[in-house]
Amino acid sequence: MQTDIVRQVKSNPKYHELVSKRSAFGWTLAVVMLAIYYGFILVIAFKKELLSIKISETAVMTIGMPIGVAVIVSAFVLTGIYVARANSEFDRLTHEIVESIK
Image 1 (cartoon, one colour):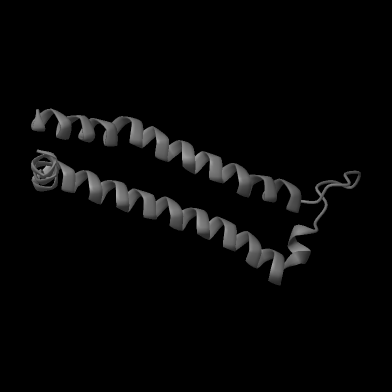
Image 2: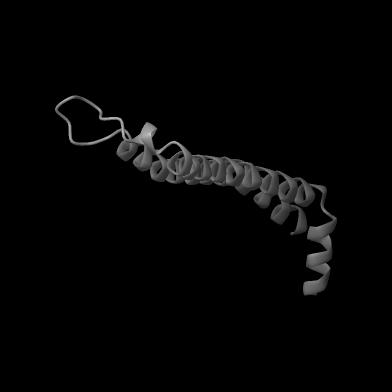
């Protein structure tokens, strides 16, 4: 019985659509995050003087601190973007797949 359900799901065109869309979107977000992170690391490695610029004459903090925080926040933002799409489009496709099997 369970192998029939698996066969039905795998033969459903909406399943293939879901897998391809989710995979492509996940890889896109992963590449964006890696570009942000490794871009920051490359700046630290090769242009550290750029990150040592003071924000103002009286400030103790340099521009590197808010940029570092932005790298961390970008991970949360990208996660939120994925969750928003998963809760709308991906869940809709999953529901349609489940309904077609019943």
